[in-house]
Image 1 (spheres, rainbow, N blue to C red):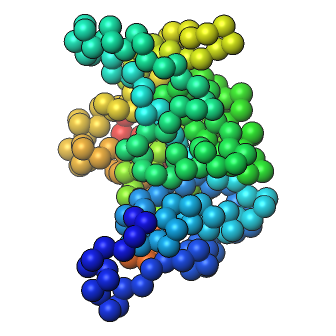
Image 2: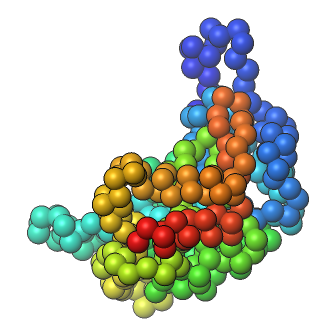
Image 3: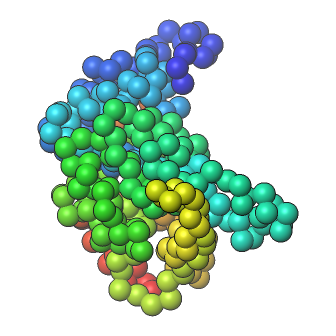
Length: 282
């Protein structure tokens, strides 16, 4: 939120978060100069940040320095991912949807304010897959999102696979464990049978105009694997349960930023832990 609520104003113990305070908290959590981080933010969990999401981005850039890189999962706010399940007259209306253009198409609103803010930050680059879309700012931005594998965007040639190769980490700022998108990369690279995929068509912008292209990606919406067959799991949060495997393996470090819980995960160690769990159980 950009302004304090009435309850905050009436709470004598409440204090707003500033850019320097956030930066110091990030450094205290272990974020260092030159880091390559994918970041998930729940701004409301932080309380009142003076300057809102702009301050969060600036604080992150302060913490990683000029040699650091920030990555965010954008998706596409107007994605027709589910169109094939809609009534015919809805599908007809979607024939006029603006095509996906990495430079202008908005990030998904339900991912919070951070992805869209990073996408529009000066110098930001974005991957070309319309559904599994990432944006990055900083030294390794091009390494993360340019020329990625659109045939397997969750795999080793996608942004998350490149994040692992770069020795990157994952930062959750007030965001819950079920936002650990890195788990989908672990699902993609795990050596198990029976993975679920979803096929769909997307309009993309090209030099020749709008082209509808066919895509087939891991089904991260309904579940890449039959987690509902595992009685020990909370089915409505498969990713959250996978993230717990990384926590239990010691791949994540917990901290606090204001009233919010924070997590800093080593990407490679987290993927190894989640892959090992998937391969044991499936």
